[in-house]
Image 1 (spheres, helix red, strand yellow):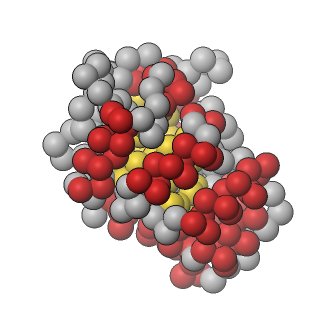
Image 2 (cartoon, helix red, strand yellow):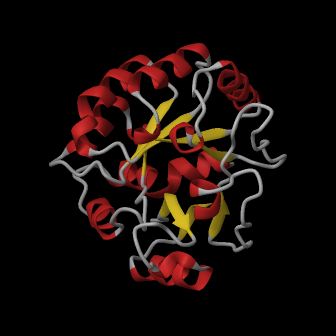
Length: 227
């Protein structure tokens, strides 16, 4: 089973001094938990400046996830990108505003998948974005176990919505979502180092799902999205 963390941060973070502040530290954390690869956003782009971000060094186990910002003051979409992150709350723009929708349409046309933090926007804005641009592939990350009803409402309505397992830790919640919506819409993610990585990794090994479904969640789904 190939395990790929779709939701990982590289670089210093406000929560404290973490091993993943550099590449060797991040790789050691992946090794510790038997995670083969990770989609990595740099903390500089996430918390500070997405327009002139610190580069994520090239490494066969890391896929760089740029932070894109719509509008004339924004950060453009990389020419070869397959996965990007949008952070409306952190970088102060309207997810479903005119510039946000223009960017979303560009991403959809180029078959680029978007990581979108649950606490970076609202269910209403997610619904509006997914309604206006129904072909945009969105992976909702860090949804949290308390958001299950709101998440289910959105998943029932929008076929291109997916979610990660970073903080969906309620008893059998991942299994319930996978059985209702299909394992192809569930991706393994940790949100580390902001959130715990050992919990989601342990959960992955103990999901009460078929081997095929677990393999999709563990890495198959994100590898397909990345092409």
